[in-house]
Image (cartoon, rainbow over all chains, first blue to last red; front, side, top):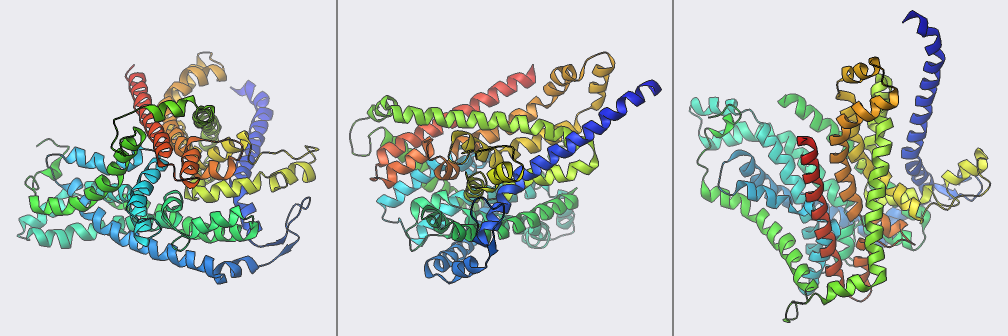
Amino acid sequence: MGGTVTAVRPMRVGLALLRGVFLALFAGFIFGPLIVLALWSVAQQWFWPSLLPTSFTTRWFEWAITVPNVLRSLQNSLFVATLVTIATSIIAVPAAISIGRYEFRGRTVVRWLFSVPLLVPYISLGIGIASVFYTAHLTGTYAAVVLAHMIAALPFGVLIVTSAVEELVPEVEEAALACGAAPAAVFWKIILPQLVPALLAQAGYVFMLSMDEFTLTLLVASPETATLPVQMYGAMGEGYLQVSSALAILLLLPSLLLSAVLARFLRTDLHVTG
Amino acid sequence: MPQGHPSRSYVASPNLLWLALALSPGLLIVVGLVAYPLGLAVSNSLGLARGQTATISHYLAFLSDPRSYWALLNTFALAFATTAGAIILSIPLGYLARASRRFATPVRLLVTLPLAVPVLIAAYALTLFFAENGLFNSILVRALHLLSEPLAISYSWPGLVIACIWRFFPYTGLLVISALGTLDRNLEDAAASTGANPLQVFRRVTLPLIAPAALTGGILTFVSTFGTFSIPLIMGRSTEVLSVMAYRKVTGGFDWQSASTIVVIMAVFQIATLVGLRGAMNRWVAR
């Protein structure tokens, strides 16, 4: 070993340098596009060949929240996401508890049915419901947008809660039952409190998914019911570079924040359950 | 009761009414808004919607139109190129992450970040970054003088692949990084100490050990890219893929039959790919 050390050392340095350069390039690849987006959203002027914007402004954000169309799409997004979160929770949570907790005939089929939306391409779902809504004259209504988002959200809502239910330690409930607690009391006082982190994670995930949803909304919404991503796509198409960047940042920041919170949430949740 | 399922012991007889109440709204949505529309798309594509007898003429029309088989070819080529790119990018990242604790956290954070970015926003951000007058080109041309002319990456075929890699490689990356991090290094050391060079160690020992993870993640990356709509909608100006083609059939004249035909073909190909790859992987793992 001793003899090879001197020969190895320059190679080690080279390797460390190579690793550093690779990490820096990779970081540039990941961060670069997001930095450009952020810069465009506050750029007053940014022309080739200047490397960075030559003057900055917050005008585009003011524009984004004062222009009637854009403001309405922001309100639509919040309204739809709130409804979707409530409705999906009401539907997904009991279903997930049933699947995760009870043995019944057809359980595998039910579990599989809830994941069908994840098996087919997203655009297939979109064209499918768009044609159904079109013939039912639902296209362009809030109901259409909310239902479309619920299709996208339901599989995740069910999955998140089911896996939390399956991780519950049954001895706690057995102890409560053995001590004479009624099954209903066990559910409300033992099972539900343990599920609170998963329920919050589910709600947060569904809300975020609804805020970010674009494909299905584009197919079923009208200009009056369009959400922020659809409005942003419109602004891109019309070439309003700074405005669409500002809208993208408005959408991206809560999304990143919520992801970070959820990641921590789910991790502590895992720690708690072992 | 087997040790593995202790939780089932006291809930053997669920209340059927409660079960029906709890499951029916969700199942109603899945059946009514997923299964029914997909079935309708199938019957639309077979010409059944107008009360006629089944015909495969829409499929024949699709396959005889050069534009549509180019779109089919583009869709597959994009998905394969992105998956290959994702695996190739993930392996050095995995080595970097396990080389030292200092690298592990930044690598993991960087790999996870794109997952939190909505696909539409990712597509737009990459279009701006790789535009001819964008930051990437101004760094290469103006700051580093590596190029004399800016590269036209956005809206090109390679640009589309790069954008898909940016957004969809993490599915592969996270699995490959964790596989490389947890594999038994003694196996590699044993191979190296018996005279294998680093390349041989990689090909004969490391690669087979991380292949299941790379394949599992690769399937996720493949399926995401195959079905992606937002990225080619924004970046694929010169490259048409099936998802965008189906959308344009609807927006340009409400041609639901052609759109249905395209999305049914996509669904069939995606399910076939998933089933085929899973079968291949099971055989491979069983070997």
